Image 1 (cartoon, rainbow, N blue to C red):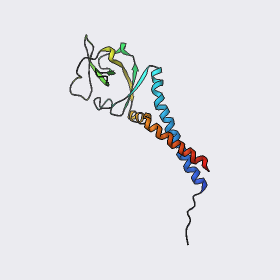
Image 2: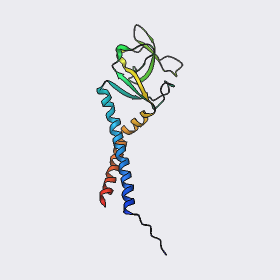
Image 3: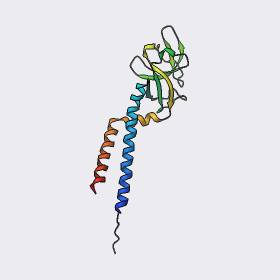
Image 4: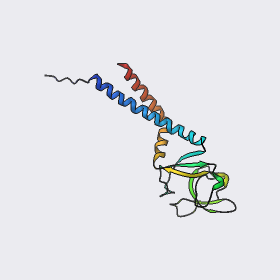
Length: 164
């Protein structure tokens, strides 16, 4: 005697509904992560993902720092700033000294201060707060390949959802 496995139409609908909901949630998260930086810019903030351990234990790799853009007038020793170095690399380090030419910076976890003088015009802004590990998520969700994959999955799920 053969047993026949029957997939109830309701179960199929429920699975598809969960899958479509999951993809829609991912797309909404993607929209939030890609547009939140534009919203932050509009109100004078920028977000950056910490890539190294040079600022541990203050910030860890993957943390997102929120920087007050153009808050250069209120920069003081011990402030944490985000800036572009001479090669155009964006760095977030602490100001440890002010000189006539600019600022001396250092990562909290580094043994030596950063090479060179940080000029005020290279400062992007002062760090106001951080959100642990969310930087990796934002980077992942805003990747164009991930967005394309999400759109393909959404199209497939919609196709199967309306097929029956």
